[in-house]
Length: 180
Image (cartoon, rainbow, N blue to C red; front, top):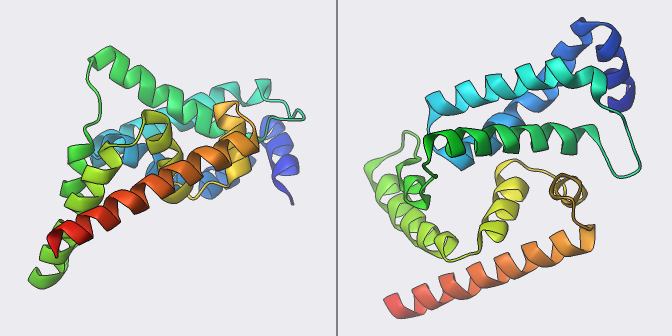
């Protein structure tokens, strides 16, 4: 069963919504986490996202430039934006350094150095570039899905991502050369 059929069935029978939830949960969670860097908040905002998706699923329609994937990520983006608007605070790229898993002390030292360097480079990108990098590599979204979500052409998103990666590469190479 393809996604379109699954969405149509979920509109009539909410048991099919569980399949959509399973398909998108990890992607949405990861996307929101990289916008908040707080697991508890991510869980809350992910739940809120899926509640909004469930409530408005009947209104979703496939159109030429409107996939379900783009729609659900747009809802997640709006939930995160609404949260920050209400709290009048924004995610600090500095929180990336606190994102680690259990590793050996040596691994943690190297990861800290790498994260600090990457964090510094990411913070120098534009907000749009940061968003595209997070969507592409954090949430593993395809470029055409990002384009639909951001209401931009595939070419514009590809160019934005290319410029972001190029800038990151230059900044990281410069960092390496300066540390030698």
